[in-house]
Image (tube, rainbow over the protein chains, first blue to last red):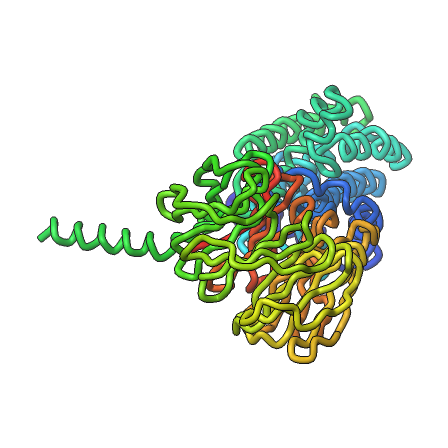
Length: 267
Length: 321
């Protein structure tokens, strides 16, 4: 096995994912509609709610729309991560997973390629979302749009790895509803995506603590700071660590001899 | 040789430092102090005790002196803008709040709210030379850049009084919307802009005919009409844009000064009252009374770039290049 084989496999997996995304126009639109509804409807209702305090990385008062934009970017990546895990379950049911898994390359590499593929798709969605938000008067400094790219790769990988880990537990597509209820919603609502930590502390210290330890919060904060040209070191290491833990667990999960696959009767 | 180069670099840096240094002075009504802010660095430099309840503030045309109305001391203090030493005080009458300096810097006109008077003070002799009877509760006051008019607005009479600066007598009165707060001339002295706190409007008057040209109203999505209470109003030198502080709406309106259309609404701190341009008119500074900070608006991009905590109840603002 040389690098060419690795490259061929990775580009094949990424190409397939991107192709699938581009041809599924409904998926593209629905992936955008969700955060846009939050932005135009939900955030509009809470416009004045945040004009009270200035917290970094912001240097002045901001409208609620501006605050939740990084949270909605996180939402795009969270749903995308879960969606690609859903597609893993689908692939397993349809048998195409077998083709992927018999490829004579290390399993971790195949899973990482799959993750990267999903992350690229999510980044495409994020930039289209940011472009629409620009016309809605949500502007970040132009450098921020560049700085946010590496953080999007990391946060996309972390959330994708979580999805991958979950997909190793799910045997049938029908069980995916459970992921929605037990993972996506608590992760999203118990985070700094919709409300800042100081606001949460006012109502519940426990909720604020949970949000602080939620890796999704840290990913959102990493994105938020990067969008304003700043680097949140704590959020970076937290997100990176979460990625490593989720990824390692997913690799174990997809190991036929050790992981969940053996218990479920293989892929 | 190296010594010489180092010295010249040091001098050049010093020179550059002097050029870019701009000071924003903010009166802190509740702290009895004056805040000095470096707007380029975005930092509060220092806070100086100045007197009881400082509100109105103006800077002399040569930028050497600050005039600060310390309301509870019943005086206007003259402060050196470098040493911040008190150089004297002017006989403002009781509870001075707002006042105006003429373009030459030798006359100060003070609104005496409780006595319905405008006091004319000669700055070199520090003496009150006349008191002009005006409407009830005079507040906003300004002198036209050509020094022809002194305009005083009476909050309760809902009137602006046109006073001839040569004779110090009222020549004309114009009825305006309820509770006029601030008055401001365009740089060419052709228009007078009047903000009305209760009506939530700004009126533009022709200064030659003393007649209404336009009434501007404001609408902000998500903000109820009762919160829109215009106070400070300033117009840029080219008369491209006017900026209006909308009080408890926590916003500054950007108005096209040619078409009188509201072009943009900018979010700043709470209860924004007074405004001042930077000398090059590239920035606008706002005092946000109840959020205890000032906001800096970049006028090229028309965005709020920073809000800086200064102390409690920032009221008036003046800028020195």
